[in-house]
Length: 294
Length: 241
Image (tube, rainbow over all chains, first blue to last red; front, side, top):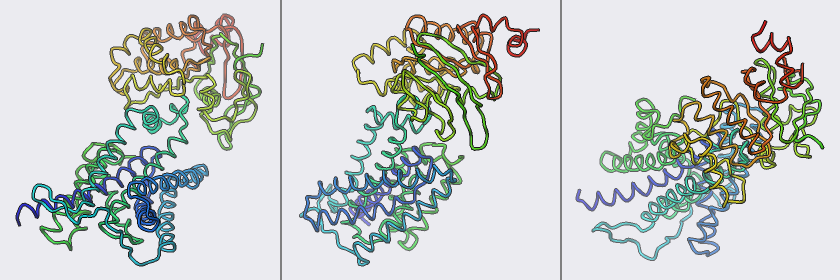
């Protein structure tokens, strides 16, 4: 293989890796704000792909605006999910495991609901750019793949500044560290938690709209990606925002290169073996986040 | 004039457990009042319920603050009315810096211009916090964390501060420092103070009036002077004969 093949592999691994990263980021936000695991991430990605396709291709709205609309819809869905289901269950004093199970139920409802709305046939997401390929340092790259990576990194940077430099973002971190102290200082913890779930859903939906043009859109699109995003979150350090992105990228690189250099049959085997290796050897992940013990 | 804080026949239930059994108390504006009693007397439950930090389902009776009934309101609403709470065990945001912790104290203030000068005020009162302002709060010593928790509460410019066990886990020297600061906050800043304290001696020496709780009931209330000479109080809480 020559260098340009490696270059192409690198771009596609960064593209899928950054999608895993966005999903993992959502897992981290939810874990930090509620101490819970939500299995809805993958199916919100699917829903985002369908919504994006509807806005962009069916309604003819420009891509960037469709992306924002998709994110806004998912943001509201995420808040409703937390306020309407999760919070209600927690108020009944049910154990965390039941809440996690409820998120699995919701994930299937979203998946089936999308089938009902958009049908069972895989839909084609039209290309976003007029050209098939762009040439970067002698490597032919699909502009949609490049967009995945660039938009994801941009979102990560925006989220970083929001969480560390704004008062509301800092209050979200404060509430996730100590909800009682936050509430006593006038921070509406119910609001910050809702916003965390909203952001998680928004990020997942954007991921869906970014991957749609590359993978096509179908009702189980998010199932595998959701699980891989979870693995990425563990590899990076479960609950750590930066670890989520790095973990997702590492997973993308390992699985894409091993699929190509070893065999694509073993793509998932290698990806999940990597997850297990981390769980055994470094359960706190790359960013040394102590989440697993509780 | 009505008291700033008043509890009227207040009960608290954790499910079926009746943990506070109908207590009444008041704190007037400008006063410094203490609540003492053994572990499990219901002091922390009382304090946290005043601040809206316990489940409202367990409340019976009424809590009034600044002319409004606050029992059942959410914590952030009560905090916004000018009631700050320094929690038992300090509860600083361990992965935020000292400065970010103080900023969070001023979270709901609209007068952003004055926040900086208030922060300087906190640093002046607790110079160790200034030295450590870019450090993560989790790396501070217990005494420094208590100072930060008090400073953070002051950043809200409250009318009243509740403090729950400010001396918990602190050396006698640091305890003295912390109580000197609490006294200053009451005398110089005119902030009404109501605090719970295990160390009854220092509590009664600092406050002007005191309440004594025992297994969910209020057993005595009096001026601190009288409480200190009360034989029962001496025997039970001051280690006297």
